[in-house]
Length: 250
Image (cartoon, rainbow, N blue to C red; front, top):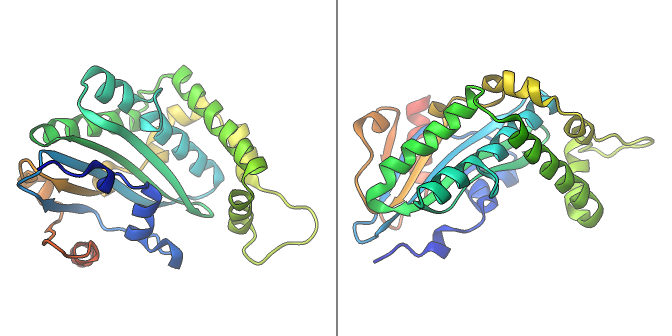
């Protein structure tokens, strides 16, 4: 039986809420590996996710641009390498989901043929670590900067809810007089060369991410398990493993 792609492919914003309790403004996630084994499935969902808090708007925008470069769209590294060259995944992508002021969820995901998941995971890891090491094409990052800048402007003028959310991130208690949303100015003037040169400062180490595997194929390697491991029982909430891994981390 194949994994129902639609079932596992729901919006990453829903994953963010489920994983972090976003409605309660929590932003803590353990590292380690959660594995839900389905021996009848011919596919595996690979999800790497990290809740991150940034020092300021510059750090947030730098991380956002690098995450977009990794896998946000058809011009990204994950799409080019995993989808076009390897033809090995359904919609490989990265996501940068803003939770609040200087808070976000960073994720990388792909649904792949079960027997190939270790290889694709290795490729995802290499793409992320190369980007973090500064192996970034300036013209490619410029494309992502233009896209993100256009998205912010478009959303601000066409989506009142989006604009209100960003206003509340900056002014949770309301404001009088001139209103300033520094994130917009920082994005417009983002120093792309500096972001590339200091990319390690913008992106957290991959070892700090939570790895979630759902589907068929081999179990995670002992190396992955050594960083914290939880086998999710059938018909059990994800919180079971989140709690277990949090105790290990503490």
